[in-house]
Image (cartoon, rainbow, N blue to C red; front, side):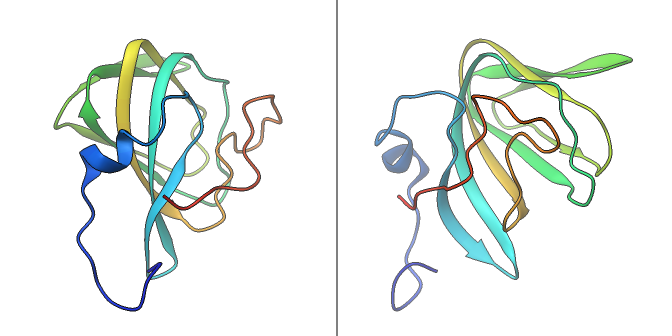
Length: 124
């Protein structure tokens, strides 16, 4: 929680606060997990998370999660859980808004250092 008590979180209002891509923002925390919002566009880096599972819930738009052996198309209202240790790369042909749910401290690029790596995340 960021404030003194529980408040509702309006995802559309939070998403309207930023326009850049591949830069997750924190919107909630619970039980050692972070809830993040991010906008995707283009190709991310191939990476994996050795110790963390990741949940991707598409809020608006669509993207595909590429794995070395297949791709999964995700549209608004659909989610995908990427198990720890599985190499993956999100790709969005057009802008896509996604809610992420993952353990606090999960680095967005996992084991791949990149210009897209975000070591510090801001609360919005």
